[in-house]
Image 1 (cartoon, helix red, strand yellow):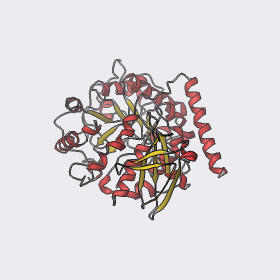
Image 2 (cartoon, rainbow, N blue to C red; image 1 turned 180 degrees about the vertical axis):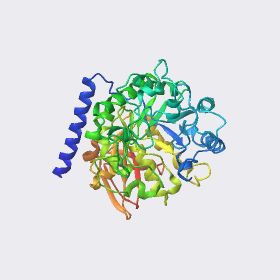
Image 3 (cartoon, rainbow, N blue to C red; image 1 turned 45 degrees about the vertical axis):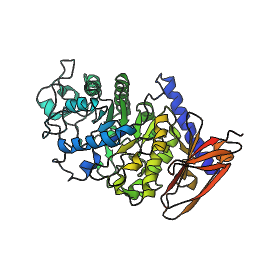
Image 4 (cartoon, helix red, strand yellow; image 1 turned 180 degrees about the horizontal axis):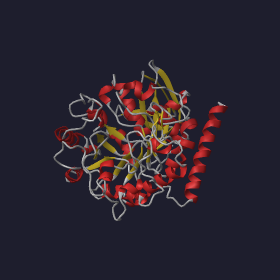
Length: 459
Protein backbone atom coordinates (compact mmCIF):
# COMPACT_ATOMS: atom_id res chain seq x y z
CA UNK A 1 0.00 0.00 0.00
CA UNK A 2 2.86 2.42 0.72
CA UNK A 3 4.11 2.72 -2.89
CA UNK A 4 0.61 3.66 -4.04
CA UNK A 5 0.27 6.37 -1.40
CA UNK A 6 3.75 7.71 -2.14
CA UNK A 7 2.96 7.84 -5.87
CA UNK A 8 -0.26 9.75 -5.31
CA UNK A 9 1.41 12.17 -2.89
CA UNK A 10 4.30 12.76 -5.29
CA UNK A 11 1.98 13.45 -8.20
CA UNK A 12 -0.17 15.72 -6.07
CA UNK A 13 2.93 17.59 -4.96
CA UNK A 14 4.07 18.12 -8.55
CA UNK A 15 0.63 19.37 -9.54
CA UNK A 16 0.56 21.75 -6.57
CA UNK A 17 4.00 23.09 -7.48
CA UNK A 18 3.01 23.67 -11.11
CA UNK A 19 -0.21 25.38 -9.99
CA UNK A 20 1.74 27.57 -7.56
CA UNK A 21 4.15 28.61 -10.29
CA UNK A 22 1.18 29.40 -12.52
CA UNK A 23 -0.31 31.68 -9.89
CA UNK A 24 3.03 33.35 -9.19
CA UNK A 25 3.34 34.16 -12.89
CA UNK A 26 -0.03 35.87 -12.76
CA UNK A 27 -2.01 33.45 -14.91
CA UNK A 28 -5.64 32.86 -13.95
CA UNK A 29 -5.82 29.26 -12.73
CA UNK A 30 -9.61 29.14 -13.12
CA UNK A 31 -10.77 27.51 -16.33
CA UNK A 32 -13.81 29.43 -17.62
CA UNK A 33 -14.99 26.41 -19.64
CA UNK A 34 -16.56 23.09 -18.81
CA UNK A 35 -16.09 20.06 -21.02
CA UNK A 36 -18.24 20.38 -24.17
CA UNK A 37 -20.92 18.01 -25.40
CA UNK A 38 -20.67 17.90 -29.18
CA UNK A 39 -20.62 15.96 -32.45
CA UNK A 40 -17.46 15.46 -34.52
CA UNK A 41 -17.00 14.66 -38.21
CA UNK A 42 -14.16 12.27 -37.27
CA UNK A 43 -15.92 8.96 -38.01
CA UNK A 44 -17.00 10.15 -41.44
CA UNK A 45 -13.34 10.67 -42.32
CA UNK A 46 -11.93 7.55 -40.68
CA UNK A 47 -14.28 5.35 -42.70
CA UNK A 48 -12.84 6.76 -45.94
CA UNK A 49 -9.47 6.15 -47.55
CA UNK A 50 -6.81 8.21 -45.79
CA UNK A 51 -5.60 10.27 -48.73
CA UNK A 52 -5.87 13.75 -50.20
CA UNK A 53 -9.39 13.09 -51.51
CA UNK A 54 -10.76 12.51 -48.00
CA UNK A 55 -13.34 15.15 -47.08
CA UNK A 56 -16.86 15.25 -45.68
CA UNK A 57 -19.44 16.26 -48.25
CA UNK A 58 -21.82 19.07 -47.41
CA UNK A 59 -24.67 16.61 -47.91
CA UNK A 60 -23.24 14.29 -45.24
CA UNK A 61 -22.51 17.21 -42.95
CA UNK A 62 -26.03 18.57 -43.36
CA UNK A 63 -27.65 15.17 -42.70
CA UNK A 64 -25.63 14.73 -39.52
CA UNK A 65 -26.40 18.26 -38.34
CA UNK A 66 -30.12 17.59 -38.81
CA UNK A 67 -29.75 14.38 -36.78
CA UNK A 68 -27.84 16.16 -34.00
CA UNK A 69 -30.37 18.99 -33.90
CA UNK A 70 -33.26 16.57 -33.47
CA UNK A 71 -31.70 13.99 -31.17
CA UNK A 72 -28.76 15.50 -29.27
CA UNK A 73 -29.18 19.28 -29.09
CA UNK A 74 -32.11 18.93 -26.64
CA UNK A 75 -29.68 17.13 -24.30
CA UNK A 76 -26.98 19.81 -24.43
CA UNK A 77 -24.85 18.75 -27.40
CA UNK A 78 -24.51 22.15 -29.03
CA UNK A 79 -21.40 22.02 -31.21
CA UNK A 80 -20.47 20.53 -34.59
CA UNK A 81 -16.70 20.05 -34.75
CA UNK A 82 -14.56 19.95 -37.88
CA UNK A 83 -11.54 17.63 -37.78
CA UNK A 84 -8.52 17.04 -40.04
CA UNK A 85 -8.53 16.06 -43.71
CA UNK A 86 -10.06 18.19 -46.43
CA UNK A 87 -7.68 20.57 -48.20
CA UNK A 88 -6.09 23.96 -47.61
CA UNK A 89 -6.54 25.32 -51.11
CA UNK A 90 -8.85 28.12 -49.97
CA UNK A 91 -7.38 30.89 -47.81
CA UNK A 92 -7.79 34.62 -47.29
CA UNK A 93 -5.39 37.51 -47.87
CA UNK A 94 -3.60 36.72 -44.60
CA UNK A 95 -3.11 33.03 -45.33
CA UNK A 96 -5.83 31.73 -43.02
CA UNK A 97 -7.97 28.81 -44.12
CA UNK A 98 -11.55 29.63 -45.12
CA UNK A 99 -13.13 26.30 -46.15
CA UNK A 100 -12.88 22.58 -45.52
CA UNK A 101 -12.74 21.50 -49.14
CA UNK A 102 -12.59 22.80 -52.68
CA UNK A 103 -15.68 20.64 -53.23
CA UNK A 104 -17.76 22.68 -50.79
CA UNK A 105 -20.13 25.34 -52.05
CA UNK A 106 -20.19 27.12 -48.68
CA UNK A 107 -17.26 28.20 -46.52
CA UNK A 108 -16.66 27.92 -42.77
CA UNK A 109 -18.17 31.35 -42.12
CA UNK A 110 -21.42 30.28 -43.79
CA UNK A 111 -21.62 27.05 -41.79
CA UNK A 112 -20.81 28.88 -38.56
CA UNK A 113 -23.68 31.29 -39.16
CA UNK A 114 -26.01 28.46 -40.19
CA UNK A 115 -25.32 26.58 -36.97
CA UNK A 116 -25.69 29.65 -34.79
CA UNK A 117 -29.13 30.19 -36.28
CA UNK A 118 -30.06 26.69 -35.12
CA UNK A 119 -28.76 27.01 -31.57
CA UNK A 120 -25.39 25.36 -32.21
CA UNK A 121 -21.80 26.41 -32.87
CA UNK A 122 -19.00 25.36 -35.18
CA UNK A 123 -15.84 23.91 -33.60
CA UNK A 124 -12.60 24.27 -35.56
CA UNK A 125 -9.60 22.03 -36.24
CA UNK A 126 -6.45 24.02 -36.99
CA UNK A 127 -3.02 24.83 -35.61
CA UNK A 128 -2.16 28.55 -35.51
CA UNK A 129 1.50 27.58 -35.94
CA UNK A 130 0.95 26.21 -39.45
CA UNK A 131 1.71 28.46 -42.42
CA UNK A 132 0.13 27.82 -45.83
CA UNK A 133 2.92 27.78 -48.43
CA UNK A 134 0.53 28.66 -51.24
CA UNK A 135 -0.28 31.87 -49.38
CA UNK A 136 3.43 32.50 -48.80
CA UNK A 137 4.20 32.03 -52.48
CA UNK A 138 1.33 34.35 -53.38
CA UNK A 139 3.00 37.12 -51.40
CA UNK A 140 0.28 37.45 -48.77
CA UNK A 141 0.94 39.51 -45.66
CA UNK A 142 0.30 39.12 -41.95
CA UNK A 143 -2.98 40.69 -40.81
CA UNK A 144 -2.62 44.28 -39.65
CA UNK A 145 0.97 44.58 -40.86
CA UNK A 146 3.01 45.04 -44.01
CA UNK A 147 5.09 41.95 -43.15
CA UNK A 148 5.00 39.16 -45.75
CA UNK A 149 4.30 35.62 -44.57
CA UNK A 150 7.69 34.75 -46.02
CA UNK A 151 9.26 36.50 -43.04
CA UNK A 152 7.93 34.02 -40.45
CA UNK A 153 8.99 30.75 -42.11
CA UNK A 154 12.27 28.95 -42.67
CA UNK A 155 12.41 27.38 -46.12
CA UNK A 156 15.44 25.35 -45.05
CA UNK A 157 13.71 23.76 -42.07
CA UNK A 158 13.23 20.04 -42.66
CA UNK A 159 9.70 19.27 -41.46
CA UNK A 160 7.23 16.60 -42.52
CA UNK A 161 3.85 17.78 -43.84
CA UNK A 162 3.79 21.21 -42.18
CA UNK A 163 5.53 24.56 -42.51
CA UNK A 164 5.91 25.96 -39.00
CA UNK A 165 5.95 29.53 -37.73
CA UNK A 166 9.37 30.67 -36.54
CA UNK A 167 8.32 32.30 -33.29
CA UNK A 168 11.43 34.47 -33.02
CA UNK A 169 10.70 36.26 -36.32
CA UNK A 170 9.06 39.66 -36.68
CA UNK A 171 5.34 39.20 -37.32
CA UNK A 172 5.13 35.70 -35.81
CA UNK A 173 3.10 36.76 -32.80
CA UNK A 174 0.70 38.80 -34.94
CA UNK A 175 0.21 35.82 -37.26
CA UNK A 176 -0.48 33.30 -34.48
CA UNK A 177 -2.86 35.57 -32.60
CA UNK A 178 -4.48 36.62 -35.87
CA UNK A 179 -5.34 33.00 -36.63
CA UNK A 180 -7.42 32.74 -33.48
CA UNK A 181 -9.08 36.10 -34.14
CA UNK A 182 -9.88 34.84 -37.66
CA UNK A 183 -11.92 31.96 -36.26
CA UNK A 184 -13.40 34.06 -33.47
CA UNK A 185 -14.74 36.55 -36.01
CA UNK A 186 -17.01 33.75 -37.28
CA UNK A 187 -18.35 33.09 -33.79
CA UNK A 188 -16.20 29.96 -33.36
CA UNK A 189 -15.42 29.31 -29.71
CA UNK A 190 -13.56 25.96 -29.83
CA UNK A 191 -10.12 25.30 -31.35
CA UNK A 192 -8.52 21.87 -31.71
CA UNK A 193 -4.77 22.57 -32.17
CA UNK A 194 -3.14 19.37 -33.42
CA UNK A 195 0.41 17.99 -33.84
CA UNK A 196 1.89 20.12 -31.05
CA UNK A 197 4.51 17.49 -30.24
CA UNK A 198 5.88 17.75 -33.78
CA UNK A 199 6.48 21.45 -33.26
CA UNK A 200 7.93 21.02 -29.78
CA UNK A 201 10.73 18.57 -30.56
CA UNK A 202 10.20 17.15 -34.06
CA UNK A 203 9.66 13.57 -32.90
CA UNK A 204 6.88 11.08 -33.64
CA UNK A 205 6.82 7.60 -32.10
CA UNK A 206 5.85 5.97 -35.40
CA UNK A 207 7.64 8.12 -37.97
CA UNK A 208 10.72 9.11 -36.02
CA UNK A 209 12.17 12.52 -36.89
CA UNK A 210 9.48 14.80 -38.35
CA UNK A 211 11.02 18.20 -37.72
CA UNK A 212 13.76 20.12 -35.91
CA UNK A 213 14.88 18.39 -32.73
CA UNK A 214 16.82 21.39 -31.49
CA UNK A 215 14.00 23.92 -31.40
CA UNK A 216 14.49 25.98 -28.23
CA UNK A 217 12.07 24.98 -25.48
CA UNK A 218 11.14 28.61 -24.95
CA UNK A 219 9.77 28.72 -28.50
CA UNK A 220 7.21 26.06 -27.57
CA UNK A 221 6.35 27.88 -24.35
CA UNK A 222 6.00 31.19 -26.18
CA UNK A 223 3.78 29.70 -28.89
CA UNK A 224 1.53 28.04 -26.33
CA UNK A 225 1.29 31.27 -24.36
CA UNK A 226 0.29 33.29 -27.42
CA UNK A 227 -2.43 30.79 -28.34
CA UNK A 228 -3.84 30.50 -24.82
CA UNK A 229 -3.82 34.26 -24.22
CA UNK A 230 -5.58 34.99 -27.50
CA UNK A 231 -8.09 32.20 -26.92
CA UNK A 232 -8.87 33.67 -23.50
CA UNK A 233 -9.29 37.12 -25.03
CA UNK A 234 -11.82 35.72 -27.52
CA UNK A 235 -13.74 33.40 -25.17
CA UNK A 236 -12.45 30.37 -27.09
CA UNK A 237 -11.70 26.95 -25.59
CA UNK A 238 -8.13 26.06 -26.58
CA UNK A 239 -7.51 22.31 -26.75
CA UNK A 240 -3.94 21.01 -26.99
CA UNK A 241 -3.78 17.90 -29.18
CA UNK A 242 -0.82 15.52 -29.48
CA UNK A 243 1.17 17.19 -26.69
CA UNK A 244 4.12 15.27 -25.25
CA UNK A 245 3.07 16.54 -21.78
CA UNK A 246 6.68 16.69 -20.65
CA UNK A 247 7.54 17.29 -16.99
CA UNK A 248 4.04 16.32 -15.89
CA UNK A 249 2.40 18.61 -18.46
CA UNK A 250 3.95 21.72 -16.93
CA UNK A 251 3.51 23.83 -20.08
CA UNK A 252 0.10 22.52 -21.13
CA UNK A 253 -1.30 22.85 -17.61
CA UNK A 254 -0.53 26.54 -17.74
CA UNK A 255 -1.32 27.29 -21.38
CA UNK A 256 -4.36 25.25 -22.41
CA UNK A 257 -7.94 24.71 -21.29
CA UNK A 258 -8.10 21.07 -22.37
CA UNK A 259 -5.52 18.41 -23.29
CA UNK A 260 -5.71 15.11 -25.15
CA UNK A 261 -4.48 12.23 -22.99
CA UNK A 262 -4.54 9.19 -25.31
CA UNK A 263 -4.11 7.99 -28.88
CA UNK A 264 -6.75 8.63 -31.55
CA UNK A 265 -9.92 6.57 -31.22
CA UNK A 266 -9.26 5.16 -34.71
CA UNK A 267 -11.19 1.96 -35.30
CA UNK A 268 -12.72 2.20 -31.84
CA UNK A 269 -13.87 -0.74 -29.75
CA UNK A 270 -12.86 -1.91 -26.29
CA UNK A 271 -9.24 -2.51 -27.29
CA UNK A 272 -8.68 1.13 -28.16
CA UNK A 273 -10.62 2.28 -25.10
CA UNK A 274 -9.02 0.14 -22.39
CA UNK A 275 -6.54 -2.47 -23.59
CA UNK A 276 -4.19 -0.77 -26.06
CA UNK A 277 -0.69 -0.91 -24.46
CA UNK A 278 -2.47 -1.07 -21.12
CA UNK A 279 -0.66 0.29 -18.07
CA UNK A 280 2.48 1.14 -20.05
CA UNK A 281 3.64 4.73 -19.77
CA UNK A 282 5.80 6.14 -22.56
CA UNK A 283 8.01 9.28 -22.46
CA UNK A 284 6.41 10.86 -25.56
CA UNK A 285 3.02 11.48 -27.11
CA UNK A 286 0.90 9.75 -26.20
CA UNK A 287 2.22 8.86 -22.78
CA UNK A 288 -0.78 6.58 -22.28
CA UNK A 289 -2.25 4.79 -25.29
CA UNK A 290 -5.84 4.32 -24.13
CA UNK A 291 -8.26 6.76 -22.49
CA UNK A 292 -8.82 4.59 -19.42
CA UNK A 293 -5.12 4.77 -18.50
CA UNK A 294 -4.86 8.40 -19.56
CA UNK A 295 -7.85 9.61 -17.58
CA UNK A 296 -6.70 7.59 -14.57
CA UNK A 297 -3.12 8.82 -14.42
CA UNK A 298 -3.66 12.48 -15.31
CA UNK A 299 -6.65 12.79 -12.97
CA UNK A 300 -4.37 14.24 -10.31
CA UNK A 301 -4.07 17.43 -12.38
CA UNK A 302 -7.81 18.03 -12.61
CA UNK A 303 -10.58 19.49 -10.50
CA UNK A 304 -13.68 21.63 -10.74
CA UNK A 305 -12.91 24.72 -12.88
CA UNK A 306 -9.49 23.28 -13.70
CA UNK A 307 -7.70 21.65 -16.61
CA UNK A 308 -10.00 19.45 -18.72
CA UNK A 309 -8.81 16.02 -19.86
CA UNK A 310 -10.00 14.76 -23.25
CA UNK A 311 -10.17 11.05 -24.08
CA UNK A 312 -10.91 11.72 -27.76
CA UNK A 313 -14.07 10.99 -29.74
CA UNK A 314 -16.62 8.26 -29.10
CA UNK A 315 -17.80 5.67 -31.61
CA UNK A 316 -20.35 3.62 -29.68
CA UNK A 317 -21.23 1.60 -32.78
CA UNK A 318 -17.78 -0.06 -32.62
CA UNK A 319 -18.34 -1.63 -29.19
CA UNK A 320 -19.70 -5.14 -28.67
CA UNK A 321 -21.98 -4.81 -25.66
CA UNK A 322 -24.19 -2.35 -23.85
CA UNK A 323 -21.97 -2.78 -20.79
CA UNK A 324 -18.94 -1.58 -22.74
CA UNK A 325 -20.88 1.37 -24.09
CA UNK A 326 -22.09 2.43 -20.64
CA UNK A 327 -18.49 2.27 -19.40
CA UNK A 328 -17.33 4.57 -22.19
CA UNK A 329 -19.95 7.24 -21.48
CA UNK A 330 -19.44 6.91 -17.74
CA UNK A 331 -15.66 7.29 -17.72
CA UNK A 332 -15.65 10.44 -19.84
CA UNK A 333 -18.25 12.02 -17.56
CA UNK A 334 -16.71 10.83 -14.30
CA UNK A 335 -13.35 12.30 -15.33
CA UNK A 336 -14.95 15.63 -16.22
CA UNK A 337 -14.13 15.05 -19.89
CA UNK A 338 -16.15 15.92 -22.99
CA UNK A 339 -18.57 13.68 -24.84
CA UNK A 340 -17.44 13.96 -28.44
CA UNK A 341 -20.01 11.91 -30.33
CA UNK A 342 -18.70 10.69 -33.68
CA UNK A 343 -21.36 8.09 -34.48
CA UNK A 344 -23.41 9.28 -37.43
CA UNK A 345 -27.08 9.30 -38.28
CA UNK A 346 -26.52 6.18 -40.40
CA UNK A 347 -24.14 4.31 -38.05
CA UNK A 348 -25.63 4.93 -34.59
CA UNK A 349 -27.93 1.91 -34.70
CA UNK A 350 -29.83 1.50 -31.42
CA UNK A 351 -27.29 3.33 -29.28
CA UNK A 352 -28.74 6.84 -29.22
CA UNK A 353 -30.30 6.40 -25.77
CA UNK A 354 -26.86 6.02 -24.21
CA UNK A 355 -26.00 9.60 -25.18
CA UNK A 356 -29.35 10.80 -23.80
CA UNK A 357 -29.14 9.62 -20.17
CA UNK A 358 -30.09 12.83 -18.39
CA UNK A 359 -29.01 11.54 -14.98
CA UNK A 360 -25.50 10.98 -16.33
CA UNK A 361 -25.45 14.20 -18.36
CA UNK A 362 -26.27 16.08 -15.16
CA UNK A 363 -22.65 15.51 -14.15
CA UNK A 364 -21.43 17.53 -17.12
CA UNK A 365 -24.01 20.26 -16.58
CA UNK A 366 -22.84 20.58 -12.97
CA UNK A 367 -19.16 20.88 -13.90
CA UNK A 368 -18.48 17.65 -12.00
CA UNK A 369 -14.93 16.23 -11.99
CA UNK A 370 -14.27 12.92 -10.28
CA UNK A 371 -11.10 11.04 -9.44
CA UNK A 372 -10.10 7.39 -9.00
CA UNK A 373 -9.12 6.08 -5.56
CA UNK A 374 -5.58 5.91 -6.97
CA UNK A 375 -4.13 7.27 -10.20
CA UNK A 376 -2.03 4.12 -10.70
CA UNK A 377 -3.64 2.30 -13.67
CA UNK A 378 -2.12 -1.03 -12.54
CA UNK A 379 -4.07 -0.94 -9.26
CA UNK A 380 -7.64 -2.29 -9.28
CA UNK A 381 -8.58 0.59 -6.96
CA UNK A 382 -8.14 2.90 -9.96
CA UNK A 383 -11.36 1.40 -11.32
CA UNK A 384 -13.37 3.01 -8.53
CA UNK A 385 -14.04 6.72 -9.12
CA UNK A 386 -15.67 9.22 -6.78
CA UNK A 387 -16.53 12.92 -6.79
CA UNK A 388 -18.85 15.58 -5.41
CA UNK A 389 -21.70 17.36 -7.14
CA UNK A 390 -22.19 21.03 -6.30
CA UNK A 391 -25.30 20.14 -4.24
CA UNK A 392 -23.27 17.83 -2.01
CA UNK A 393 -24.31 14.52 -3.56
CA UNK A 394 -21.46 12.04 -3.98
CA UNK A 395 -21.11 10.18 -7.28
CA UNK A 396 -19.39 6.79 -7.40
CA UNK A 397 -18.54 4.74 -10.48
CA UNK A 398 -17.55 1.10 -10.04
CA UNK A 399 -15.82 0.01 -13.25
CA UNK A 400 -14.64 -3.40 -14.38
CA UNK A 401 -12.04 -3.26 -17.17
CA UNK A 402 -11.63 -7.04 -17.16
CA UNK A 403 -13.25 -9.70 -19.34
CA UNK A 404 -14.80 -11.58 -16.42
CA UNK A 405 -17.04 -10.43 -13.54
CA UNK A 406 -15.40 -8.56 -10.65
CA UNK A 407 -16.69 -7.58 -7.23
CA UNK A 408 -16.38 -3.89 -6.42
CA UNK A 409 -17.00 -2.53 -2.92
CA UNK A 410 -17.31 1.02 -1.61
CA UNK A 411 -17.33 1.87 2.10
CA UNK A 412 -19.06 5.20 2.55
CA UNK A 413 -17.07 6.21 5.63
CA UNK A 414 -13.66 5.05 4.41
CA UNK A 415 -13.89 6.10 0.77
CA UNK A 416 -16.46 8.91 0.74
CA UNK A 417 -16.23 10.50 4.17
CA UNK A 418 -19.94 9.86 4.75
CA UNK A 419 -20.65 8.94 8.37
CA UNK A 420 -23.85 7.03 8.81
CA UNK A 421 -26.16 5.99 6.03
CA UNK A 422 -26.87 7.46 2.62
CA UNK A 423 -29.67 7.05 0.12
CA UNK A 424 -28.26 5.42 -3.01
CA UNK A 425 -29.53 5.70 -6.57
CA UNK A 426 -28.33 3.85 -9.70
CA UNK A 427 -27.92 6.42 -12.50
CA UNK A 428 -28.10 3.89 -15.34
CA UNK A 429 -31.01 1.90 -13.90
CA UNK A 430 -32.82 5.12 -12.88
CA UNK A 431 -33.88 3.58 -9.58
CA UNK A 432 -33.16 3.84 -5.86
CA UNK A 433 -31.26 0.94 -4.34
CA UNK A 434 -31.89 1.80 -0.71
CA UNK A 435 -30.33 3.43 2.35
CA UNK A 436 -26.99 1.98 3.46
CA UNK A 437 -23.46 2.71 4.68
CA UNK A 438 -21.58 0.56 2.15
CA UNK A 439 -22.23 -1.11 -1.16
CA UNK A 440 -20.84 -4.18 -2.89
CA UNK A 441 -21.75 -5.43 -6.34
CA UNK A 442 -20.55 -7.89 -8.95
CA UNK A 443 -19.84 -5.72 -11.99
CA UNK A 444 -20.23 -7.54 -15.33
CA UNK A 445 -17.29 -7.85 -17.72
CA UNK A 446 -16.24 -4.43 -19.08
CA UNK A 447 -19.21 -2.92 -17.28
CA UNK A 448 -19.91 -0.18 -14.77
CA UNK A 449 -22.32 0.73 -11.99
CA UNK A 450 -22.76 4.46 -11.35
CA UNK A 451 -24.32 5.54 -8.07
CA UNK A 452 -25.46 8.79 -6.50
CA UNK A 453 -25.18 9.02 -2.71
CA UNK A 454 -27.23 11.49 -0.69
CA UNK A 455 -26.80 11.65 3.06
CA UNK A 456 -29.89 10.25 4.75
CA UNK A 457 -32.15 12.98 6.09
CA UNK A 458 -32.67 10.80 9.15
CA UNK A 459 -29.04 11.31 10.18
